[in-house]
Image (tube, rainbow, N blue to C red; front, side, top):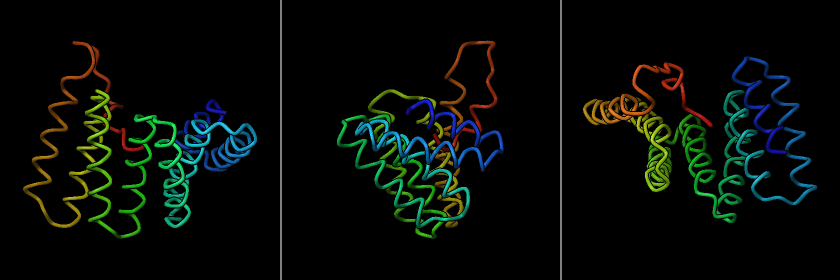
Length: 170
């Protein structure tokens, strides 16, 4: 079930929305049948990402709120941070910048708590984008500087991974 959700996200990133949707629906069905909260949280998370990508913020928010609740119920802080991050992106797309920033801030706190530096930087970048959209340029630049500093720290010397800069949803 987790593999189906992961395959769906991979198909989405590769530009195959039809395949991504099919795999996400399969992941949701199987996770529901199995009654596995962690798998269901991941399936709803991916379904939310796909809905945001389609511009269906109502569906995205519903899926991501379910993912968040299931992740919290399972005490899976990494999944909770992912759901919060993706919910922030969906809420922002729906036009609620203040709530989006609050959600991204909660996701940031969890990433710091679990020590996930890659995603911490990604969320700082998201927060910078959110601040930029509402004209808070100086604060946006500070968040961006924090993100860049972390991106520069992660990884091994000599092993640049420019794709990490693209991380915005997971």
